[in-house]
Image (cartoon, rainbow, N blue to C red; front, side, top):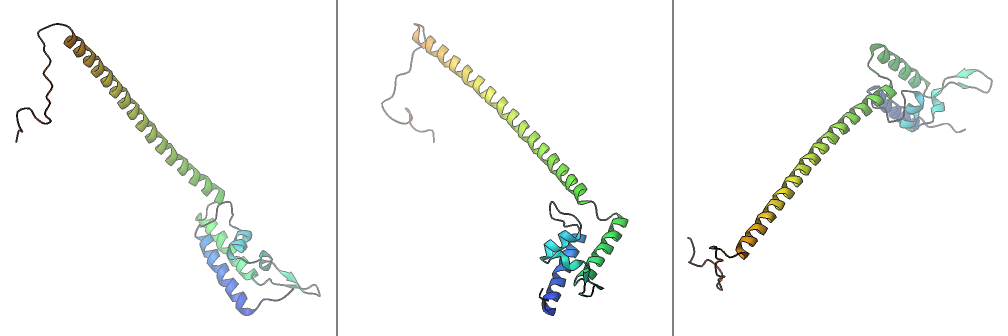
Length: 165
């Protein structure tokens, strides 16, 4: 297996440290955990670099990023002792509960709006029905002989006696 250059190692370490800071600040991607697997995946490096290796003679040697894995685990343990880093699943549950509460509020607001519009529609239909009944009554009155006379229709457009201005 080919060894990586010092520059690539430095770039990888920088990327790992940036991801480590993000994770320890609580920015864990959905479906992930506070672990080396997430750290490696987010930094774009193989997670095998975080674990010890063996030389050809069988003697152990540290992995290229093992010191970062140990630092991550140590800092994570400190934050957990302080109660700062919650379990990601518990945080996800809380986030989803807040989202459900927001959706319930929106649903209640929509239901209230629908109820108001339904009431408005019912009142409007009642008014239209009452106006139609009044129109029918007035037509019947006009059709029956009485002392009510229809006004002659004007052939001129506009006001019959001039403008009101």
